[in-house]
Figure 1 (cartoon, one colour):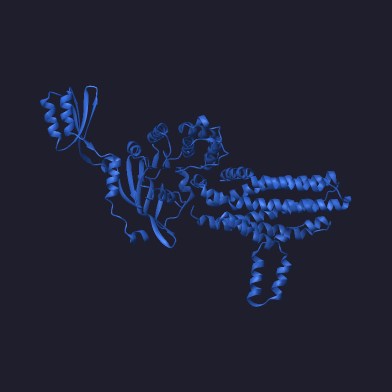
Figure 2: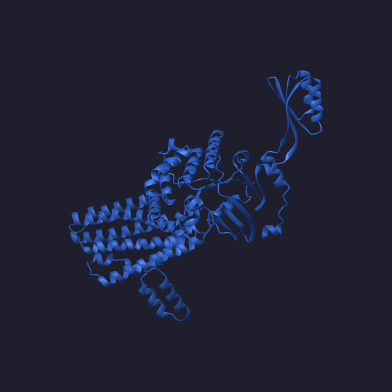
Length: 316
Length: 255
């Protein structure tokens, strides 16, 4: 039976020392990520995301605290049996082709000999990298290399995917493709731990979101739990004459016409005035809805309201 | 685990055989051996000695320098270029990666040395009509010496940058190539701490000179089998110790 927690950390802390000064990169991180969950790991540059991932994969040793992958301490190589990892800036031997690289990684992941070829082809297909699987990696574009990196992470058919900025440097089309792949993996029940700067992507894919700032976990919850209702209302109306539209525009933060419909955004005070105006003008009200924060807005609010680290905390 | 090990050795080997430093060393040595074997200014006896001498020196130099240059930057390069991360994220111990890195690079060096050795032995046999078992033994011990130098480089590279590693290894290599008898003589001439320090240094330094059978080969001397076994065991133990210490150090290193 599989352990209930794919990732578990207790007071995970990493203190770096440089030029005789201590700096706490990750401070007492407590994370519990269930098997099958998709969790976004958000934070500004230097917030401690990559350091956390490095500790989970035992590239670096925690200064304090402990971490487990499927209940196996991270320090043990077998903890990584169920893991597929995609690094932030993937580098692979330039002379290998993606197929050769994946073959080697399938062997390293412990895939049985008779299944290696099949797993390589499945991973290439999932990451949509079959088209350039025979070309040396050194001759691939950044987007192609990202897909090879994803295929590399998938080749062992891992239950837990740790992805560090998988959409970094991708064009919009490739980013959508990457999101679709992740969505498909999520539907297959994989656990995904996704460190990303693309908040809209995280909002669409992730079940829960963890926000880390200056090494501290500030928030962990579903996007609905983290975002709040705003004081913005969106009204959609039809049969609005140009004269009435001008009056509506003077009461709203923004208006937009789409054929016979107008969409207006206003605040909680003026929404009643706009509604009265539309009613008097005989316009048809299609909908009125209170807007929620986007994840980006919630992220900025949470980070800006976070207590600043004192020098004592920094020195740990 | 053996499959993972061989997959890593293969990757390391493929990377090493692409390095220009290896190509240059091997080509240069092949040219020197070929020239020494084909251009004759002396009578046949002297010519054979010159070819044996030059050939052995070139195999040793090219092998040792290739090993130092290939391995001094291998780990540093893997960490700096982040090539290490996808591999270490697999369920394999770090020690396995390190040992595979060592054997892969050594395999590439041995490939070059084999080209040189085959050329040397073929020249001696076909062109100069000379063949001796000692030639093969001397070449074999050169392989062992290069394995030791490679292991020493690997160990030092777990502590220092490539330039520092290459410098330190070559320095230790030169020190180890000194006649051990000279160091013992030096120790006997001193007393107190100096004597202790020289004895300690001579004990820790690899006795590289012990692997050199060039003189015996050139002058057709006989080397006792017991001595050969002793040197082989010493070489294997020293190499294993260096690799073990490298693993110990690398397991504790943050990447």
